[in-house]
Structures are given as C-alpha cells and as structure tokens.
Length: 450
Ligand SMILES: *Cc1c(COP(=O)(O)O)cnc(C)c1O
Image (cartoon, rainbow, N blue to C red):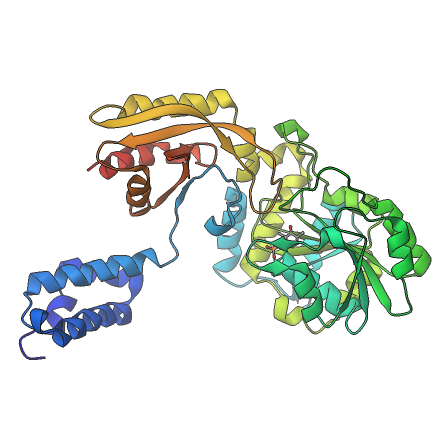
C-alpha cells in the first residue's frame, strides 16, 4: 500500500459516495481496489496523485453504472425493440404491478373457501373473454410456452413441422433446436418454399404426437410458395386424433389495418380456425409484460396444467397483475389506445412533424443542426419484418462530432438516448419517443454539443 492513498479517503469522497446508492458499497469498494492494485503494479503509477486515482475510480464507477438496468429513450423508431425491453407498459399495468407487488394478494388463495386457489384462474378467464378460447395458461415467455407444449404432448414421439416454418427468432430461439431439446423427434415436411397437405398426410405415423404450425415472424417468403392453411391442418389433425398446435409468436389481439398496417393473423382467428393450442408472447403486439400465453381447448390446457415442468416456468404476481391490466384494455375496444404500443402506432405524421419542428425551433443553431426528416419506423420484436411505418424524426448534426461520436455521447447521457445510424446520419425517430419525454430531451440534447 506504500505510496498510495488509503481506500477510506476515496470511499468518503463526494465523487464516489454518489455511486453507492445505485451500485452498492461492495461494488464501489471493488472499483477502488481494482484501480489501486493496477496503479501499484506499474512503476509509473506507484506514486500517482489522489486526483488522478480518483478520476480513474470515477470513470470505472460510471462504466459500472452503465451496466446496471436503467431506463433509456428509444429514438430508433423500432417500437418493440427486443434489446430495449420490447413493449412499454400502460399506466394501468404499472399501477397494477405496484398495487399487487407492494403487499400480499390472493395470488393462489381462494377467498370464498379460504383455501389454496389457482394462480392462473382469474387471468385465464380474462384471456378467454378476450380471445374466445376455452381456457388459457400463462408462462414466462413464448419460448417456454412452446417448450411446455412439446414436453407435455410430444416427448419421445414425433412432431410434424413444415420446412418453411423452422424459424430462428432473435436471441437464439431456433425452433428445430427447441424441438430436439424437448426430446421430440422432428419430422420435417415439404421443401424450403412449398408444403402441401399431402406432405403432412404422408408423414403421419403411429408415433406422431402433434402437428405444429409456426408463424414466420421475422422473415417472409416470396415467389413460388405454397402453404397449408390452418383450417386444413386442423381437419387433418382431427382425422388423425392428434392436436394441432400453432406457435403464433406475435400475438395480435386486434386488427392492425386501422393503424395503416397490413392484416396480421390474430389469436382470435387462430382459435376460430380450430387450432387446439395457440402460443404467443405477451410483450410483442399484445403490448404487455414478458409472458408466454397458451390458449386453446380445455382438455389440452388441463394436461399442460398438470405438467410438473409448469412449476419451473411460472410467472410472478406482478407480471400477472400487469398482464391482467393490459388484457382489460382489450375488453373495452376504446381502451386499446391506453396501450403505449397502440398510441405510438396511432400517432399521425402531422403530430410527429409538429413535435419534430418543436425540437428544431428550440435547439437548431449555435453549431447544432436539427433537420426534420421523413423516417421509417418498424414494429420490431420479430413482428411484421417488412412493414415500413412512415414516421418523422430529426437528423442530428452537431459540429465537432461525427454521427457515430454523437450517438456515443447520446448513449452516455444520464438517461441514455438510443438513436438510429442510417446511411451515415444520426437519426432520432419520434414515433418511438413518448411525447411526455420531449421537454426532457430538449434539455439534454444540447449537452451533447461539445
Ligand atoms: C417471438 C417468437 C417466439 C419467442 O417468443 P418469446 O416470448 O420471446 O420467448 C417464439 N415463436 C415465435 C413464432 C415468435 O415470433
């Protein structure tokens, strides 16, 4: 230790104490020790000044702060950005989480009988009301939903899937791998571009446990393609007395055409087609918390419910509270606008353009150039991959900073701002920015200018 200042001098310095609340004392001490031990190991820094070491410690601590979970402002225009946490929650969902999370609840308690109750009962009824399904179950995410279904019905047996549906979703969810890891023998039918009902028919054997249909999610196929419609597949499943399962993923509960988007298959349509079990995500087009929702026929859901694996995939009380509150918005059609995703989709170009001019009027000049520009937003999150949503944003050009450097500075703000770098331009898309953040952003953007 000789020559270097004592640890406690750094620990009590205001530039360091501020980090303790967020990072904790252990992490702060570790940062100090790390910096001191590096300094000690090199002849050149063995007698480094207190100030030099303090600066190094402060930098290490702000780096550590960037690695904690913090809110960011999404200026990418990708509304369900998986890296940025997919769907923002509605106010009602947030309130419900707080309300239920704060204390005790009847999570698994039957208030009428005073005995143990079901964790899934209330939310299942609500999902049934909204989707038209007989019954429902909620697990951790859609990947878990698929896993539970395969484990329950197909373990040690065969599942038939069309080759053109063997997708990989972002984050390494590869359907063929999930199927194999579930101990299910994957029977691929059709070719890359075409599959016919006869392909499925010919693949049926005494070992076939289910027919699996997957949403193409994040890619599209064009040209000479052939698919089997859901109703045909359901009819085949019925004849073979095996369930037809659909991994719908995206989970739209409303028609998207009023938002200027192409029609996206809804959960209700899958149910109406007679699919026995439909799995979808809670945090994609549903606009709720991360969950996997399974809806379908009562007898099949009952079998899923009795699978011991469910215990490992179950969701907690605050997630269930947020999901129930989000689903309530769908129970009253006019309330869908309370879901942030649908508010962002409903924003008109005039509104976005007016907001963009508000930024320009407030900040343009003094070496900062903000240009109002047409931009392209996306739903993202593995949904509607080819659909470009017209939007408006700002091209940011601050003297002395390249677009890459400017993007870096924006990410270093106390509430980091994530922009899109496109064709060498730094773009802030306003469709994915909640209007209530505009004033905050107008104050923070100039701090990135030298
Ligand atoms: C997104 C998606 C999944 C994975 O959903 P998570 O909720 O992220 O686990 C699975 N299948 C399909 C078809 C999807 O689109």
